[in-house]
Length: 165
Image (cartoon, rainbow, N blue to C red; front, top):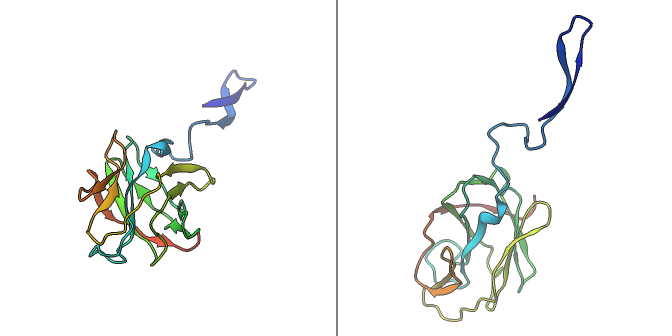
């Protein structure tokens, strides 16, 4: 914190103004560790018994909670972007599964995650899945993309996408 202080005529020091460069108005606010938020898995086919079938999982592999409100998930094949529901936070070691609208994703597909400022946070390589075999693409920590039946190691719950933020 930096501030401007003056002494009164009685020798007291008073703080006239202060600027906190690392604060966001809340001393316990999460640090910017957005690079730790990754696209952890992508399901391109409808055979998955979960609602919608097609889904994108985001995981926080960092050490601090992340505010991912209004971040966009964009599908290259359709050009469709959906936004993460306002007030969505992602705790470290957790994942959120987002069911995408029908036909948002296709095969082949490149999925991009974009933050509120319009910066690309993560992007998948081109992913392909043409078999209804209940397999998905996933990214284990420290590895490259794999196609199979594994799931992300983080505890996952369902998130919500909205068409605009």
